[in-house]
Image 1 (cartoon, rainbow, N blue to C red):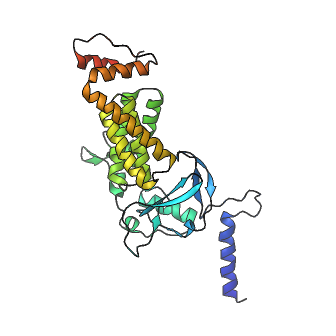
Image 2: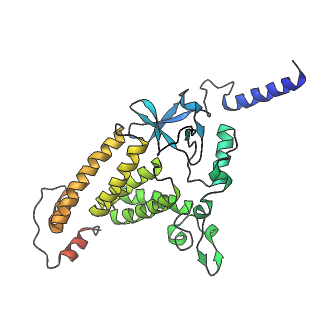
Length: 302
């Protein structure tokens, strides 16, 4: 074998062993694998190899998405695709800035991404944008506290979006639904400025925000968000996916409650209060001010 070919072979073997360890009994595949999630699509449970889908190339702003549905891997178009246009999927989350996405792709998939969004650094500016405070951008000064971050970071800054996402989950878990709803709404507003209109992550975040508003008694906003999430997941996951079916049932439930709310707000909030306390529905005395009474329903007792 010529010396140059031998050198190339050694390089190929070295690269192969980087992601397929010789001495490991449990080999791991870091390239050409797809994350396998639970039926709800929320929890990763493993990695699967699907030869056909391995042929689909990456684009940071793809025209397709991959979902697991009842044990089958499916490729869904995110919109109209022109004849002859290449099908693409995103290997990494678009919420990362271009440089971080390129590093992740290089480390795990061994290629340099040259898509239009990476070349043009599309939307990187709003993902790390700071607001002008006394003429100085101080976004780097505060990354770990919302109270300090909100005055200085733009509403599309990825650190702030992640803080809102995490804290909204914590507040919802603690049943502080008003705070959770406000945080989740800010998160979705930021996502809408960054993600593709049919991105699966946007759909799931909108669904979560809709549920949080629903739990907080904001049925009109909650129903609107649930409907928007349903429209997105119909594209990304399809009508037969379990999470889409759950969302359809949720949409019907919120629609029914919204109709009740429009007919009689007082009755709606009375029934909701009874449901929250897990007791049979009983009518409360008519308040002097319906608006003041409704507001008092959602103060957490200490």
